[in-house]
Every structure is written in structure tokens, then in C-alpha cells.
Amino acid sequence: MPIDEPRPARPNAAPAPASQQGMRRQNLALVLGAVAAHGPMSRAEAAAVTGLTRAAVSSMVVELMRDGLLVELGPAPSGRVGRPGNALRPADTGPAGLGLEVGVDHLAACVVDLRGAIRAQGRVAAANRGRAAGPVLAELAALADGVVAEARGLGLRPVGAALAVPGLVDGAAGRVVHAPNLGWREQQLPRTLLGLELELENEANLGALAELWQGGAQDVVHVSAEAGIGAALVVGGRLFRGARGFAGELGHVPLHPDGPRCACGARGCLEQYAGERAVLAAAGIGTAGGDWIALLADLAADGEPRVLAALEQAGRALGTALAGAVNLVDPSAVVLGGAYAELGEWLLPGMCRELAERVRVREWPESALSVSGLGRRGPLLGAALVTIRRILDDPGAVLLPG
Image (cartoon, rainbow, N blue to C red; front, side, top):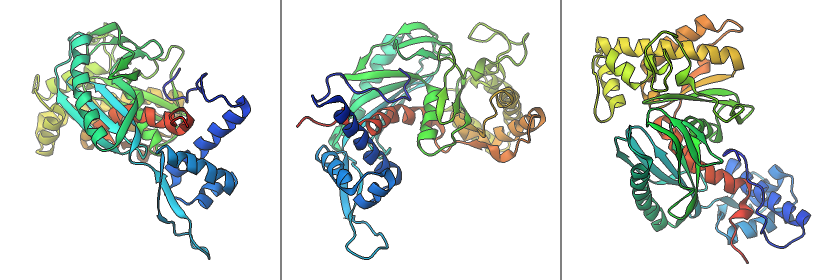
């Protein structure tokens, strides 16, 4: 099922009548979700937000605290006469989410607690372009093992994992359909890692979900770019996936049908004008080892003419492709994320000009185009938050027996 949807209750859940069990799990989710979204808050405030009685909230809180999902702080100021109730917030120990990422030139892992805070993380350089999936995932597992060990030392217990990959994925089957910049095609990935169930998702989708889950716009085109260029469409607070789940391949929108051959096999794709290799070539750098995004940002900040021209050209190419998406789906905002967020100062002017010129169905304000505050952390954070959202949507699925 889609990674942004809550799972149904497990068929072997506690042997209570279905309606009673379902109501209990729903109420647990209401209380935990309210505290996560609006807390810290008292039991009385949680009752007001959820619409449950104070007695029902107190019962749910006892259960959530018993199993380490909520903790109680000191008195919560309420401005009311009488003794204030104690404030509740999600626990910073206990169940957690493991996020994993395979990039063209790096591997990354992180563990996030129920508050959405990254508590342990690791990132290493890795030349993954053209490498077989097996060795790449073995290195990723070794990196993740160290991150999980660090998290466990902090009292955290990862209960699920998700993997961000730059390409077309079939999440239900655990299969990478095509990741051109990695050189992977029809690659079946393991369903577990470090003993945890492993979910698979496109990295641009996870970047968009991270923005959404942290209070972002409900209708947005989210661009995630580094070596390649992907996008995710969020419509009404949900990912728009398309008929087969492959929506958002912005990098392979054709700008010039007779242009250079792309890694995907087509000609004139956006990546040939705004992807890593195109930008570096236009900047006169050729190939760059290490953090080429930081290198470009440093050179642009120093006023290097060829670099500034290359980023201007890339921004205009991005804006041209995005104008088609804006005209088609009419989002409230466009967000530039991924590593390219760090180049936003030089990419956005060209993007704005092309959007203003080409979006004619309505006025396109510059304020509708912004840079993600998550930057290149977005896909990895989104991967870790997948498990956290699962817990918030159905805490009964991770409560301990008894």
C-alpha cells in the first residue's frame, strides 16, 4: 500500500470485539496525534482538541505512558483558576523510525524519535553510480547498524525502516523499476534490513512528505534535485502518484526533443540542462569529486562568472519545466528541495522569470516559489518519519502486550 497511508489494524490484534478494539485504537491515535501536533498539553486540553471526554483521554494517556509513547512533564500553564494539569508530550525514548538513503554519491541513515527529532545519523561518501545493488546495500546496512546502535544507547528502539532511492520504484513489490543515475533497472531489494521491515520509496516523494508532515503546504510541487532531478506532487495533503505510482519524473520532461541523449534513453530531458553533469560542464568544472554542490555555492558566492551563468541557465531550465506542471495542476506553491536548495540564491531568479513568463492562466507571485528549509536532509528525514507517522496513525500497533 502507499507509504503515506496508515496501515490497517493487524489481523492478530488483541482479541477484543472488532468495534471496541477499533474504537480504542482510534482514540489512542487521536490522543497521541493531538499531543504530537499541538503539545505539550494537559489532559484537559487534549480532551478539548480531540472531542473525547476527560475520562477517555485519561484512560488513553495511561496506556500510552505505560508503553513509552507519552511522557508527563511539569504543570501545564492554562490561564485558568485552579490546579493546572501536567503537560504531556511524545516520548524521546522508545519506538523510533529508521531512515535510509541511497544517493548517487552518498549513503545515509538516521533515527528519528516520536517528536520528529533526528537523534542519531550518519552519512558517507560512496560512488554508487553503476554499482550493483548488493554491495551498495551491504555498505548501507553497516552504516545503519552503527546509527541504530547509537540510537539504542539513547533509549530508542527503531520499529520500522524506509529507504529513499532516486528513481522509479514499486514500493509494494520492494523493487526499483529504473534508477538511471544509479544504473539500476528491475532491481529487487530485500524486504528487511537489520531485522526491520523495509519500505521503499522515491526520494523526491519522501522529501515532499517530510515538508508536508512538518507543516508544509497541502498543494505543492516539491522539487528534489542533486545528481538527478525529481519532483513530487502533493494535492490536498496527499501524494499524487499517477496510475502506476510513477508521477513526478520532472527530470525527464523533454525541453528540447532533439537535445542530448539522457541516461533514461530519451533526448533533451531537463536533466541534460539542469542536472549535475550539465551544470558542472557549463561551469567549466567537468567532473567534481566530493561535495560539488558546496563547491558551486562557494564559487558562485565568489562571483565566478561561468558558475553564475551555469546556475542561471539551470534555473531557467527548471522554471521552464515547472511552468508546465504549474499550468497543469495549479499548486499553491513550488518548493525547491534536495541539495539544490543550497543553490537557491542563484537558481531562483531564473526560475521566477520563466514561471512568471510561462504561467499565464493566473498571476504567479514570486512568493509562491521558495527554498526548502530541510535541504538535502529532506528525503532521509522523510524516510525516517514514515515509521513515526505509522505510529501516530495507529499507536496500538506498537503497544506492548499486557
